[in-house]
Image 1 (spheres, rainbow, N blue to C red):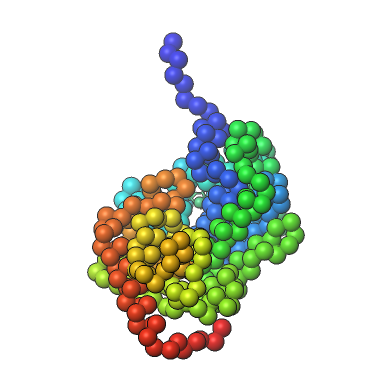
Image 2: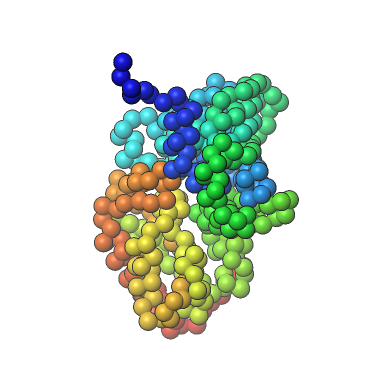
Length: 339
Ligand code: ADP
Ligand code: MG
């Protein structure tokens, strides 16, 4: 008798959850991205105890069909890709089919959902990845997901969670970035019953920046756009008079996906050149559009990291267009748009 055994699905999911959900904010990110992929134009997130006690997400997206609901919790179960060729042309934020399985395995999860065409809605309750209840319910518009007691069965992970203040900061940060990535969607974040973030979903990026960073800051940004054969960049950059001591006000959005990329940060700062003092950073929201074929988004389970096949060209385009935009705009007086 051999000693190698396949792990039960719940245990396998619990192990991979460590990579996908390293803190409450990562669960929030995955759930929001599911809502966006479902076409939601309104997403409301409420948290208690920085998401450790409760994360609730309500969206007005497409919903999940009753037959699909238990399948959505299985690992590697997704409606977003079908073949390996699809992996080279990903247009959705999700594609790994792992998030719900991971989150469910380390929490008490309830999903309530209905699709337009169904006559009733459905509800699923699972604990530690085991489905405990699946039933019909009254129809709603979209999907409500509640995650209770995140990490209840992973004490080691719970130890890595920082103070509630730090975890709340990360949750707010994710909502801010997702709002900037999706100005056409209205986001609300409520923490302990208090409103923290509210965007209107007008579709206007400058207005969204004003809603996130304040009107005064939004008046000190200028628009930027540039393109070459492979990339198209668009967004806002702050005038050199508006700088911050932190890099956190740089948001990079790639085909609608919020990503982290040190090389792009460096290219942005290079574009400012001597206009930035050492240790100061600009406020930048940069949308980069490109063919999914020249970027690999499947580098890490959290999908925050990506790899470019034509990276040097992109860095050059970013630095150059920022340099050019700043030298043009700082010469002529600014026409301030109404906010
Ligand atoms: P992925 O997003 O990679 O497909 P997930 O585990 O995050 O994997 O979700 C599994 C499936 O559940 C999705 O492919 C989608 O069909 C469905 N789903 C999850 N959340 C929502 C939602 N808020 N609205 C509609 N469908 C959803
Ligand atoms: Mg997903």
